[in-house]
Image (tube, rainbow, N blue to C red):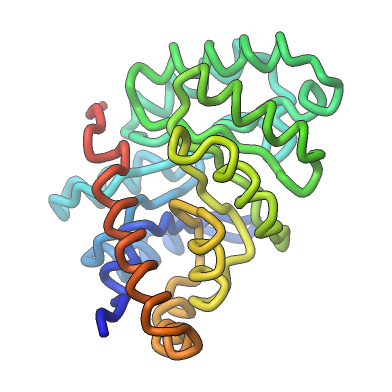
Length: 256
């Protein structure tokens, strides 16, 4: 049987070190621990971005760096504020930009504003990877599909579903977007993936990447997660991961 290894799965994991009690030393220690593994991306906040960039440059690492853009997790800044943050982040080494949509605009059905916001975000990103970040749990299915459609039309690379910090995304919402739009847009699950069993279930639903701040839990539970599946299910997921890796837009990334 073709087994999914942790190294293989790492290529679709974005891992980060952020939080109200996290120091610069914590960030450096965390990424030094994981820097030799082929993660899809490392994430940090804007303050620690220059230090993470320096660490990866000194290690000659090509791992992508992502940062959250705009008021976390509401996205209530002006478009001008968001684009200014994007420009600063790019100039300090970010290669992926996780951009919160204005949550009030989406709940108000102000789709013209949302469309303009995505367009301005993409213009400011200048070819970098953009994830449009929303909390699926707070949206109706029709709103989720509207956000997905506008993200596709605007040229975004991912929708990031979930802000983390205890929020767990519904498998049905991930499947909904994939059933309607297929691989026209990729989906990153942004919270609640605490072990490999959950990760593989999201993969079955259509997820393309996931964010996880405890990758050691994924490694520890990966064998057990596969043992719970039929052999053909594991092989299908292995092929799915291979496809995700080969079609990941970061393979064509623009350097800062």
